[in-house]
Image 1 (cartoon, helix red, strand yellow):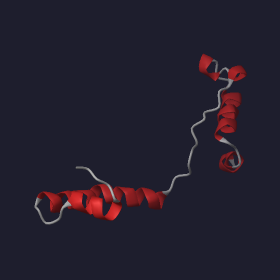
Image 2 (spheres, one colour; image 1 turned 90 degrees about the horizontal axis):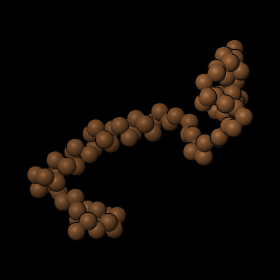
Image 3 (cartoon, one colour; image 1 turned 90 degrees about the vertical axis):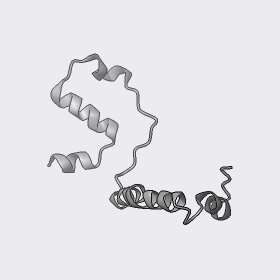
Length: 87
């Protein structure tokens, strides 16, 4: 029931709802001067997170190893394929 109730709420509404429920007295919970964050929140993207983890854990070390062994030149590839010049 709590999940259903909170599913349609913004983060600000959810925080204010928690404050109303528990009646916290700490100064940070002064709702008279509520500051809404300008930082947007994104929904969690499991597939994207798994892709980034794969890139960091598998692809990056493989590219580094190929470059360091002389099998492949990272700098030429970046310049030719992405027009990025690191020289």
